[in-house]
Image 1 (cartoon, rainbow, N blue to C red):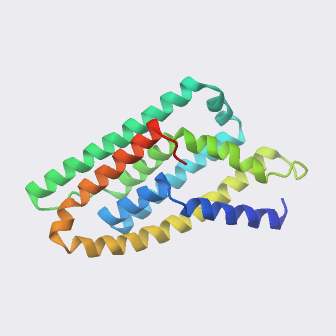
Image 2 (image 1 turned 90 degrees about the vertical axis):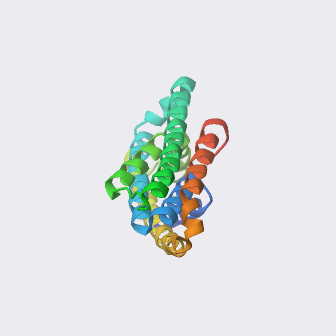
Length: 208
């Protein structure tokens, strides 16, 4: 692969990462409601999920998903159901916070696992990688699967950088919101509503 091609790939990847979508919205939501560390843990989980999609695209697993409407639907609705479950948890946390007056905080490991599951259970990410990565593969530059793995890793690296920056700034904004008691009480309602929106779009709409 030529350097110019790799630079073009990185530039396009950065634009795609910062564009409005479920992953970056998920990072922003977790960072605002639970702090920057929660957002970073979530981002790491999402990017770990991207490793799975990279391997699937490189070795043809995503092609099977593309050709099987049944498998695609099962994975899609499983992902939507998981997001609805997260929404229910967010509403429950808000109720518990009001009863106990002490916010319910999740561990970094828990948020990391959530990020992985959310990403893996989105079949549209798998199909995106299957369509996107080959556009930058040079058929005269060696193993195509190896090139796709390299491109996938570059995508993941830039995503980690961008998601981390987003988590830090969103976390700072969330800290300011938390000082307002009235807004703080509603924060999990907002988070739950965002999860419902993402889940509904995953199940019934076109979401990139």
